[in-house]
Image 1: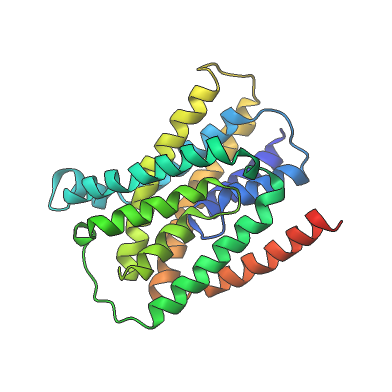
Image 2 (image 1 turned 180 degrees about the vertical axis):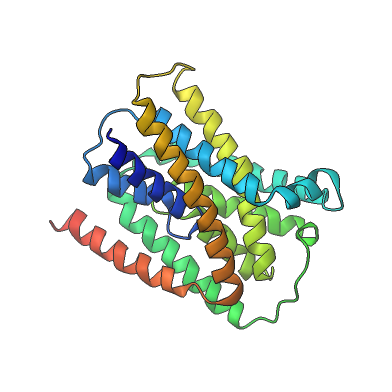
Length: 259
């Protein structure tokens, strides 16, 4: 893998991890374009580690409040969300492993677009008062976690799924986006553990400098992505992302099943 390709993949991971357009789906597209067929699990581990560090840095004050301050109840909400997420992922991997292929990608993007449209439509019809993360209901945390599990499939955006589910459940925009992004911390940690185990705790040979540069790019672009999407969802509709995903899904489905 060249440094240029590593930079591009780092940008894709960093930007798409928190925008509602699916980082895994876009990485799959670019890996196909660059004909990357070799095992690159360790590179993916580094990219995930970079995005993990970015969200921890961005939310460091909020995380401190959750761990040591008045928002400690959020810890249990995160645990509640992770339980159905893990169960759904395990079931999908066991019963529908064929869905983890490029042929499903177009339908995954279409699912993400649909949930964005639904979330936007429902939220516009509600008058939602702002409240803190610790006031999120247990049932809402479970529901968000359940639907988050489907984001393990290529093309289904975790941020789009969790944020729009939260909006439909009556959670205000700022709390929805903050809960979604903070929830990404245990999700990425779990994903990292799984990927390390899949490597059998061995370190395959990789181009160190390319991987390092790609991870740095992913870290910086993740920080910018978090800031961008928080501003967008607080002040504007993100229905434009839904339109983009719809067009992308149509193009991919046509290319996959017709050409």
